[in-house]
Amino acid sequence: MNKVIILILSLVLISCKKKDRIEIDNIDGYKVEKKFKNNTLVSSKTYDGDMLIWEILYNKNGIVKKATEFYPTGSIKSVSTLQKEPNYYYDIEYYESGEKQMMGESNLIKSRQSRLRRGAAIFYTKQQKIISILVFFNDGKEKEYLVRETILDTITDKILTDREYDPPALLK
Image (cartoon, rainbow, N blue to C red; front, side):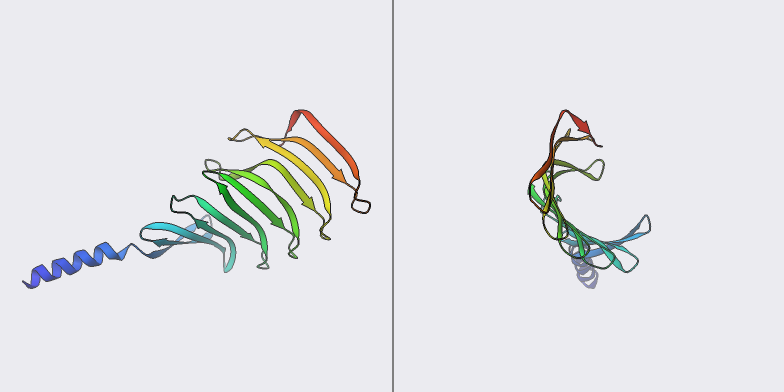
């Protein structure tokens, strides 16, 4: 009877043990802390020493739903938010002082672990004046192209340059 109770308790402990947990890995000198709920990855944080450099939230399908990158000072460097599965994101980049630097869209290319821009991206000065608008597209694999470039005068708010690239200019 005691052996049966010990066996049942052991099975219960083993089955419950790994459902909700935090795993810590060291990858290329970075500490990666992964949080699981019901055996599903829900978030991860990447540290360089004690400094948080990335925080990522995942949806129930294991797709990145929000990725936040940090400056060494702790202020937010960029935020990418999933707009449409599997890999369409809206990105905002910030100056270290907190002002918006860029807003645009991208595709996360999982095989390369990188972003390729697409659509219009608006770039700002630290005074939050629009300095340029660039239009991109990508091949969904590894190449990013510039289609149009508009540069504005931040004093007069007039267009200085408006150039379309035909054929599009290969950037990456």
